[in-house]
Image (cartoon, rainbow, N blue to C red; front, side, top):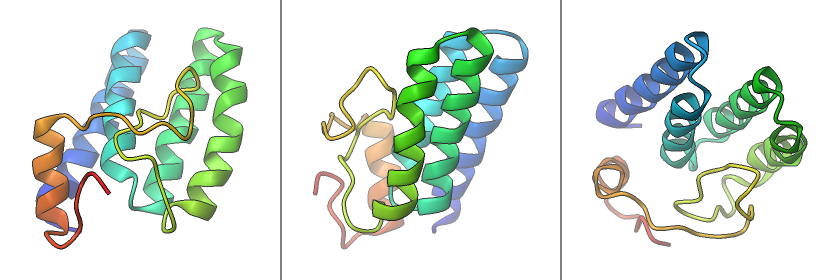
Length: 121
């Protein structure tokens, strides 16, 4: 993993934790969604993004989010290297199979991580 991608992932997780501690759930989820997109090709980090979404859902009492994250954690561990819906934010309110547009700043990080792999494939 390139250093720029690793730094972006660390920043997303740190910002999410900071927002969570300040009880800014919406901001924390936005950072976790970013972390999710950035980690989709890395099984343990991908699963971590889902685990933190589950924990945040629990903290704010969003049990639909909690329930939706459980199968996503398992899928992240088992299927990340096989297939992921690129750009999917990882939230329970979005189909786990639905690809979404990748923000431009994230596209640049992902392309630089592996120039032989298309962000959109």
